[in-house]
Image 1 (cartoon, one colour):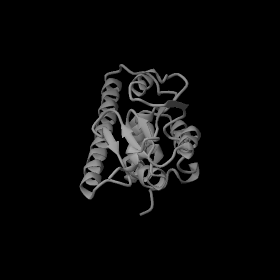
Image 2 (cartoon, rainbow, N blue to C red; image 1 turned 45 degrees about the horizontal axis):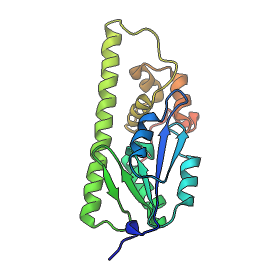
Image 3 (cartoon, one colour; image 1 turned 120 degrees about the vertical axis):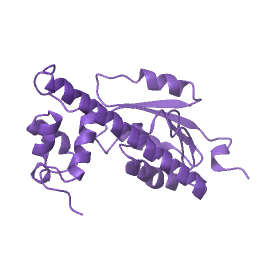
Image 4 (cartoon, rainbow, N blue to C red; image 1 turned 90 degrees about the horizontal axis):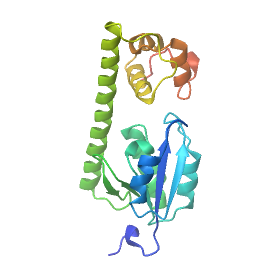
Length: 211
C-alpha cells in the first residue's frame, strides 16, 4: 500500500533557522541542498521565540504527503516536549512528514504512519538528543565557572546565549530564583530577567514554578 510520503506529487521543503543576524545559514543550506528539496526556507529568529512566521507559513502551504526537511531537531523545537507537540499538533493533522538529516534522531518520521515501536524509538532518540545538549550546556558552564575562579574571565556577559538560557530554564524549573540563577551562571540579574520574559512576566520570574 502506498503511503502519503510516496505520493508522486509530494514535495520536500527544507527549513533553515539561525538565532541571530550574526550567524548564517551556510552549513544548513549545504546539507539541505543535497537533500532533494524543491525549495529551502530561511528564517532568522531566536530559539526562545515560540512564533516562527516563516515556518508557519511554510507548513500552511504544504499538503499531505509532503516532507519538511531540517538538519537537526533544534531548528524547530527547544525540547523533547516541544518536538513531540510539533509532530502531533503541527505535522500530523496536515499529514506532513519530518526528515531530520543529522544526529541521533536522523531519519524520516511519519506522524500518521509510525507503529508504536517506531514512536517509542523516536521518543528515546529525542530524549537522548536533549540530554546530550543539556550535558554540553552544563560542561560549558562548568568550564566558565572554572575559568572565572582562576581569574581568567572578567565581567559578566552582556547577552544570554541560548545554552545559558536553556540552563537557566532548567534551574528555574527546579525551583531556583532568577537572582540565584544569575549569580550561579555569571549573568546580570536584569539581563536574565529580560531573556526569560518571553516565557514568563518579570514579576513572576522569581517565584518557584507551580506544580
